[in-house]
Image 1: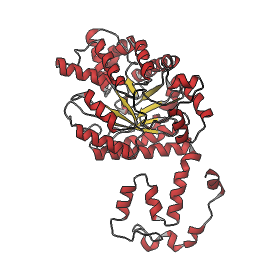
Image 2: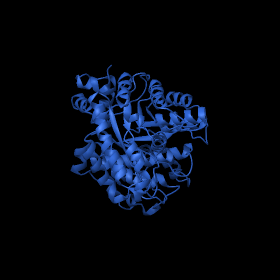
Image 3: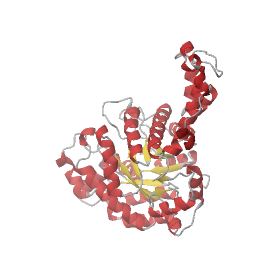
Image 4: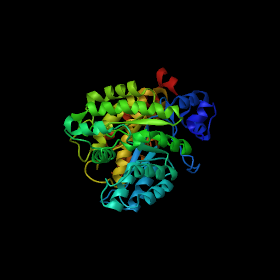
Length: 441
């Protein structure tokens, strides 16, 4: 059974490695050892079609952005989820996760896998939950086998990575109420698992059967995304004992998976006040080493309902600049409702901006080329190039043209009109770029 990590440790470059090396403008001599060490991963289930565009996630790679979609028990509309998946692909999501827990989740997953030819993740516990609801009318009437069957069903369908809530133990579940968190436990997967352990007085199946899951992952070359079941759901709970203990547990599990040639990334919070965002990344990296770090947000305030994509993009930008490798977006509907397609787009665009802002810090020489081109286009009043270089060209063009102003080049926009600095001092448009910028091209 050969995984991406197995190949890298043998010094063999796979097709996926060649693709990532080309996309990231790095050499295979540089990339392959990092995959071998686990500091870069290429989630790539070996039963998915080769037409999938795979990405590299990790140290030295561009910061990637994930989009969450999927049904809930109160809203099952596969057409809406297909539209969201198409929006995610159109606006350049790097990965997509199906979080469906309502309806025929297996069928929904397979449809979305076909719809989105990009790296694809799921949360298997949601299928186990769905099975309990559909069969027993009680989500906790499930067995350890149901946990494992859900995991196997997901990876057999071709899912590239799965969130596994294996860091929360029975002892930790018993401490949840004693810790007296302000927001409690907000992870659905974490809550389901904690409630199951407390009901049956059994250990977490994803801990008990971790070695068996590794065997299955080896067969399909599935990446583990070790989930933060106890992430803070309020900035008031940030970095409490539950969150930190789980991170310690997960760091150990990551090493066990890597030893068996299984690629791993580790998930992080959540809700974190702004002054703790950078320390969170440093703490995580000190525990997990160079294993890729994947964060939700983080949200830097709890009061931004309707605008949580902005509140979280602030934390995401800081996280990316500090070394986070994959950002999970939030949409304007977070905490309020299932997002629609427009909100998926808004969240994705906000996070692509955050990812690029982070890359300007950690990968400056590569990332800044985009900004350089935009600056040159603005300075020379080249509107066609400005719009084309925008992170959302459609919206930029719509705003620029909404007053009926002349669409051509060498004319001002309505913001400054005749007072445009590049018309009042036209010599500026002919300046030579300084030496520092020239060196980065």
